[in-house]
Length: 236
Image (cartoon, rainbow, N blue to C red):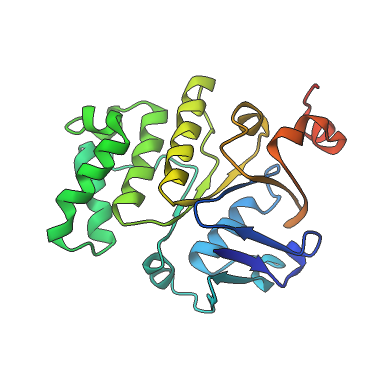
C-alpha cells in the first residue's frame, strides 16, 4: 500500500491511498500539481506544499530523496513525453529497463517473455525501431520498459496526451490488465474523459487545484458532479 498524507496537499481528503493492485487518478489543469505530486513520490522533491507530504510504502516512510531507493521499492515514474530511444529497437529499449533495474541476467529472458505475453503488440514490433512506432505504441513501450525493471507502482503522467480515442482506450485496457497482475497505478490527466470512457480502469478520481487535492469521486459519478461538469466542460 502507498499513502500520501500529513500535508496541506491532502488536508481536504485526509490521505491519498493506493492499494495493492489499485488504480487512482488525479485530474486538473496545468499548474495544479499533478506532475509535481508524481515526481515527489518517485524522486522525493517537489514545490510547497507538496514537499510537506509524507509518503509511505506499507509501514515504511520514504524519508530519503534518493530516487534509486524508491526504484528498488518498485516505484517508477513515466513522464508524459514519449521517452523511448528512437534509434534502438523495441526489444533493446525493454532490455535497457532491465539493466537500469539491475535485473540478474538469469532472469531477463523470463521477464521478456512475460512482457511479450502481456503486450503482444510489443512482441510483434520487437525488431522495429522505437522511433517508428505510433504515439500510443511508444507509450506502451515506456510502460513495458518500467515493467522490465520489476515495477510494482507505476506513476503515469498524462498517458492520453496526443492520442486518438481508440489509442487511449488501448492504454487504459492495459492498465486493467496490470491491475489484475497486482501492479498499482497512479494516473495524472488534464482531462476527465478517459475515466468517463473507461470507468473500471480506476477506483477513485481526485481533483487537484493549486497543488492541493480538493475532492475524491468514483468514476461513475463524475458526470453528475457539478464542479466536474463546469470545470471540465462536460455535458451530462
